[in-house]
Length: 442
Image (cartoon, rainbow, N blue to C red):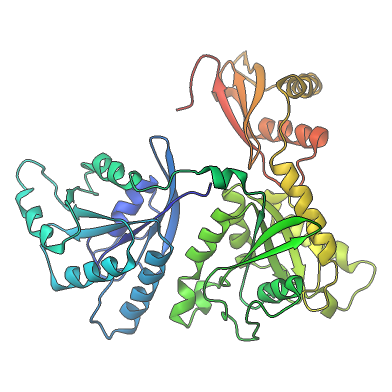
């Protein structure tokens, strides 16, 4: 089941980015006293108790503003509202209730999404809580006082948020359709690929970058296997963004990746792999999804016997963190290699759900440690006691050791390489949890 999406919404300068950074445990958003500093939505994975979700930071909403930047930020916030499972409506205790807060509240009511009303900048819970009562006038339930800066009372807020998270259902467990998200920069041919697969104009295809504004799902059946194709809006470099509607496409892509089993990362053969392609690929990699690097428009390239190898070398060097992802060269226009693309999708779907018995895993682990001794530090050697698989999508393994501080990332990478050599796992990342015997993860 995909992680729920939580959007932080509110007028400018109420502390959205401060709260976002506090929850993400990092200064991801720029925090400044000037309204409108956060002009582009930023996302991060957040954990609370046994729940994991994706948090979205947004620019402030000024409903009546004619300022171009503030209007763009409103469009971004509207996209976040549409994509979110739960909305955190943040207001400012020091400023009090404003007309802008009322306008935002009306917008949220029309969305019919769950809203958690949070009053920020309550820096002293003993003396500053009286001001929160005026926010009952918003008609959005009980206000929750917090201080994102201190921090104070964030636990109560998070408890209120997770109450709205959807629970997995039996129908979701039994769904055998493979969900495939197609992501990439604008105009690389994502919609053209969907149309070629479907054999009809299911999605509008245009040479104008950014035609696909939202994620679009298309169901197809190939060789008795059902697929759901999720076409997404293209992602652009921030410097090149001139149209407000493209600034908020990233969250739709994040949401599409979260819903997918396998992600096709499309690259334009005429442009080669770019810095923006690496950032797009990183979204899928960090989400633990099965991945295929798809080089489109291969029919338009003048080729010799070295062209493909040169492309592969460039992609391998640039996406060094995704060595597991196969690379395929296709043409969405002519249909070249699309059949082989689906063969690879099917293979990766099987690899994502592959389960290895504990006995077989430890046979491979024993051989790996015999060939390359575990690291040691100051006379103390790492001992890997045993390994077991705990989940799939992606395949996740727990390594029980005597001292987790001795587990160097390079040795963990060595173990991963040995496992891939033994079991394949082509197209899917592998996750490891290192745990000391008798202890749980922190």
